[in-house]
Image 1 (cartoon, one colour):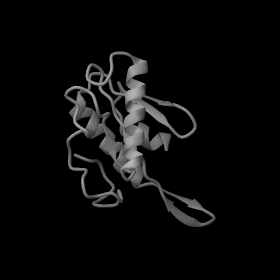
Image 2: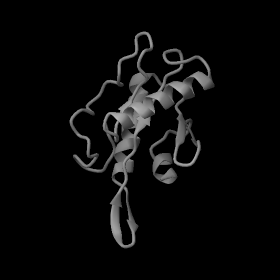
Image 3: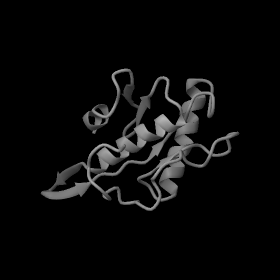
Length: 130
């Protein structure tokens, strides 16, 4: 999974494992829209992955919580907390989606984009999201 994620990132982005099944991606210089596009691209590509468990293909999905410096926090601890809360909201509202923190001044519930209505992650082709 780490390889799939890394292949979708810019050279300046940083990827790290953050606990058992969580990853953190830092996108220097990205605003909310750019972060949403990157998160959605990651979600789509991971959704194209299949692994085999006892010769049975298993689909993989990913829920993503995104936070933007200056909008959802001003230091690493605040950003990780905000992104973690958004991640849990993504899981609670159906999984396989990208969410932003709520309750932040000027922050919508989700980063704007064409995500609504496709919860399976299998709609369309498994290429890059525009």
